[in-house]
Length: 482
Picture 1 (cartoon, rainbow, N blue to C red):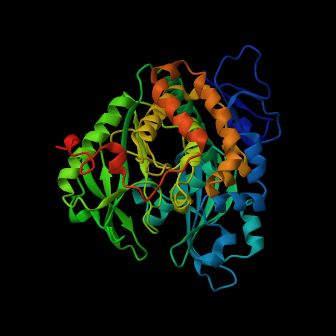
Picture 2: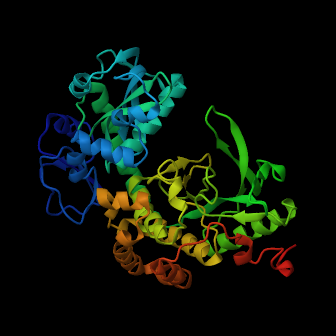
Picture 3: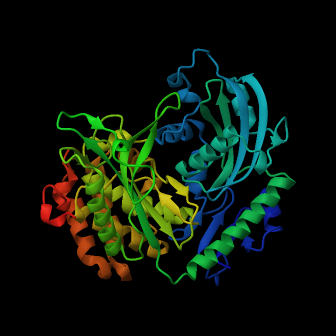
């Protein structure tokens, strides 16, 4: 077995231990050769230099209401403390629905719903932690999940991850305006028979997924769909749907405005995926050449980055398949990919965070893989793009060896969201030392070393520069066009 449940004989832990196939106890056996320690509760010692689910430090932090709400708001997650910023005029918010959502390792296990409008006092919020999920809450069957249920599930997964946790019971409130607030996060939830069974099944599924991933020999398949913006010589945004349809290797993407109005201003490249990051970069350049044929107005500049024009956030999503979607991989991508990229982002890139670019942002895909959505659009130059593809591939195939997680510390998280390059430079240097020790580093050393040099120089990219120049795309290099 690759997983061990470590506890201090809490009632819930003992109940779980009787239901799971995974070994458990109050002390790690001396001859245990597994990979991940699953902590239940914070009453036992934490073993250093071990891969873990539910770090004890994160449990203790999440149990402190003020610290928890501060971290959630840093990640763009709304809490009671942010109620006033949503335009609430009442002294205490009134809810139309409340949900209790059980989460384990990026998955929603069950949702309980209470359908009523309540005026919530501070005492009620405190008492919620002590109430049973069955008191006025009714389990929602997956096939009956409403829009509010699905959104509550997404916010619960996001809140658990943002707090550095891997499981817990999250209480969500839906305001009359439709906004959701995270009311409570219990990192050591009380378990009734139903919840104990669901958590036990989830732990065993995790063990099976972990064992399969550790045996994986094939390399990860990478894809991407970076976005760019079209700007006229007069400085006006020209919507991409003037030239492109929503489908195909070169298409347009949407932004949803307030009031749910949909616009299609963004151009998006969708190169053919590959297990070779260098080939993916060549495929991306081929889609750029195709885009020159579709976007016939050569006077329009192509802008990349995070927020080259206010109100138009851009993403550089990277797709992963043939690998297991798990929290260990997501945190490795956050620490070893998203964090270094901060050092070269443009001045306006930070404006997309935290609504976009929050840590651990992912979306499952129909092909069975997932897309990592945290990064801004990184097409400023071939050097940056090839380096990011190589780095993403290296991380995905070696993340079990990348154990450093500076982003578990609140001050490093804060530096990430505000784009504090000086605070992060030394941290990134240590992270890169870990990368250089990996056996696969030398395969893409040329691309990785060039990216490292650019990162450590902390030279910001220019979000208003036309990316066609760096990529030698017509009209700047007509001989390279079709």
